[in-house]
Image (cartoon, rainbow, N blue to C red; front, side):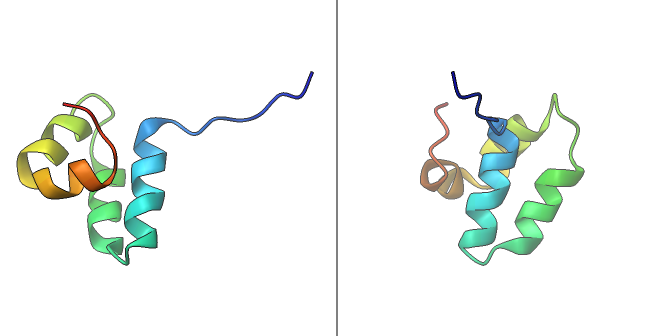
Length: 56
């Protein structure tokens, strides 16, 4: 059996933002607490939330 390391949703979003050239937003998300990043991201960047594949 091959064990693969899965990235958490926050890390996947940060990678997607880096790929889009949005490093400052990715760094902002990285600095946010684990329990609040998703809510704040949805509040401030609703269009990016959709592009990053996050379900509300």
